[in-house]
Length: 486
Ligand code: ADP
Image (cartoon, rainbow, N blue to C red; front, side, top):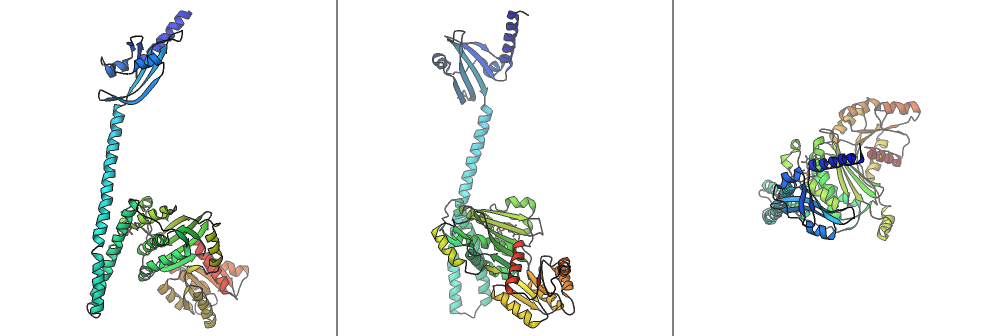
C-alpha cells in the first residue's frame, strides 16, 4: 500500500469515528464559520436548527470553551468548542462537541424539588411538634398544682383517685418533655452547660431517676463505675442520657431481670455500658433503634408506652458532647447492651488534676446484689455486713434449700457459696442455682486450695474460687472482676 493509500485509509477511519460517535460533533470552517462537517448524532440532535454557540469567540481568541448544562431552546447541553488549526498553526475553524443532558438536568431538578418539599414538610413538622409540646405542657402545671391543693385542703379524700391522676399526669409530663426536647434538638436549639463531671456522679443521679421503675420491676442492678472518669459535659443532660437507657433496660426486661452498668476508660474516651438480660432487639432493628419514633412492635408495653423518642434524644445529646452511642444484641430474648463513648476531659487540665487527687480517695460507685451462703452464722453475717458497708446489698442463707429460696426472691447477680454445707453441698447448690438462673455468677469459698479442688469447683460452674480465710478485699476484688467480665 502506498503512503497515499495508507493516509487515505487512516482518514477514512477517523471520518468513520467522527460520524458514528454517540455525541454530536461538528466542524465549523472560518472565517464565516459555516458548518462543514456534522456527524450523524449532530443531525439527529439538531436537524436544521444548529445551536447558537460562541464559536466566533473561540475562532478569534484561540481559547477552548467548555460549558455545562447550557439551556438552548428548552433543552440542556454540555458542549466544548476548540479551535481547529491548519498546518501552519493558524486557526482555520472550530470543532464542536455536544452532549444532550436534558434528561439528567430535569431528573436532578425533580430530586431537588422533592428535597426542598421534604425539608419544608420536615420543618413544619418540627415546628408543629414544638408548638404541640408547649400547648400540651401549659395545662399540666395547674393540674398538678390543683392536686397539691386538694392534698392540703382535704388530705383524706379521694387519695387513690388523686394518686392515679398524679401518676398519669406525670407520665404525660414526661412524654411532653421528650417531645419538647427532641424538637429543640432537631432545631439545633439545645445548649449544653458544660462543666467537669465525674461519670460516677452522673451515673448516681441517673440511677436515682430510674430507681422507682427499677424497683417496681424488681430488677437487680449491678453498678461498677470507678471514680475520676472525667468528662467535659452537661451533668444534667448526661444523667438524662443514662437514665433514658436505664429506664429502657427496666422497661424491656421481664420482671426480676438483671441490669449492669459499668464504666471504664478506653484511651481518650470514657466508656459506659448498660447491659440487660431482657427481650433483646432483632437484628434488622438495630440500625434504626436510635431514629425518631422508632419502636419495635413486640416491645410495645402500652402501660408505660413512650413515643419512641428516648433513644433519639440519647443519640443527639451524646453527639452534642462529641461522643457516640451504639447498641448490641444477639437477638430477641438475648438481652441488649448500650454503649456510650464520650471524650475524656484532658487529664493535664488544672481542674482535672485538682479533682483527681481528691476523688481517687472516694469509693467506687457500685451496687450489686450478692447472695452469701455459709452454715457458720458468724462467718455469714460478718462477710455480708462487710459487703454492705462497701455498697453491696446482700441476701443471706445458711444452707442449700434456704439459699434457693432467697435466690428466687432476690435475684442476686453473684452468689458466694461455702462448699461444705449441710443437707446439700456447695457443688449441688451451685448446679441448682445455675439451673434457675444462667446468668448468676458463682464464687466458691472453701478451705481447700489445691488444684483438684479448684478444677472441681470450676466444673461445677464456679467462676471464682477463694480459699479461707478470706478478706473482704479479696471478695470485693473477685466480685468486681466478675462484674467487669460480664
Ligand atoms: P420508647 O421506649 O419510648 O419506645 P426509645 O427511643 O427509648 O422509645 O426506644 C425505642 C425502641 O427501642 C423501643 O420501643 C424498643 O423497641 C427498643 N429498645 C430500647 N431499649 C431497649 C432494650 N434495653 N431492650 C430491648 N429493646 C429496647
